[in-house]
Image 1 (cartoon, rainbow, N blue to C red):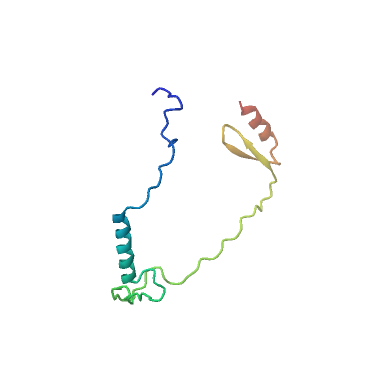
Image 2 (cartoon, rainbow, N blue to C red):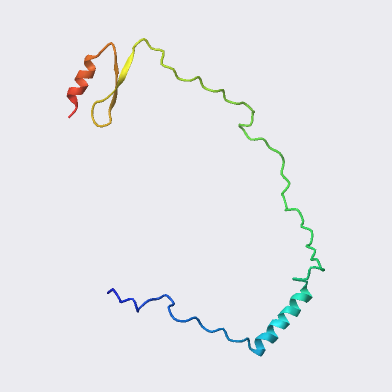
Length: 119
């Protein structure tokens, strides 16, 4: 599609339409509608419309059958995981791509080997 100059626009750029006076037929229809609304009690603060009472929603009577796992047992909180080993962890090395390997203090040569393996 080619680009068009600014005079070709879809937005309304002209003068707004002049608002003409209401016709007799429109005035008559509005008056008739106002009478209808008054008769129905809309817009009249002296007259209140009372809504009919709602019936409760239908609920099928069913026997109370407990589910299989409704014993009431509550699982206990698991113990927190804490490292209690004798080996001291120096850190984590990346051997290849995302292969994470722990490096301990008792085998420091592993860290050197891992460093040589990387590209």
